[in-house]
Length: 180
Image (cartoon, rainbow, N blue to C red; front, side, top):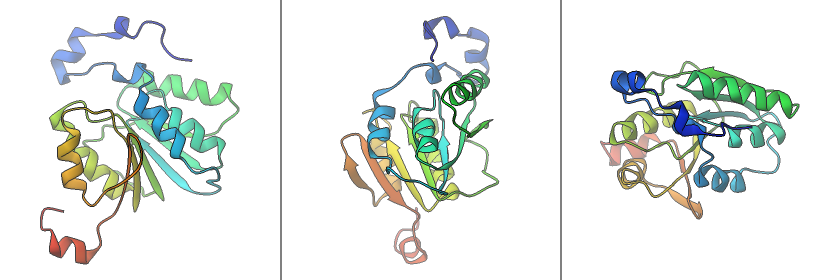
């Protein structure tokens, strides 16, 4: 399920407070591209989806055996994902969390799809992905700030159209690149 009319979710007060827009209410092509590269078996793998929105990658990862935690800063997104997981007989944790805040747990794999709408998200998204898991798969949408994200995340490996993979930098990587 997803909202029939996402534009009806626009809230001028929420936008004025924190530039909050209901990006979560759309099924973006980057999410479907990300789903296409999720491994067939994830038994016991602890997965985080950052900025889950409708949570398609989370639902697929859970269906493939992962222990999934999906986070979004929109209460409505988290509520709808819980309902969709239940409707599909899937178990996953859905939490409201602002990705500008540190993560308290670690995972084996981090997922994110089309989360770079604004310049202000580049560094917090990269930081959260790096602190969350040693490996991240990121679905891209061709947004203007993705180039900066990829530069900061380097080295990245393009594993499919619209999807990149990067790993946690090692100590040697950090010594070679002080900005990492």
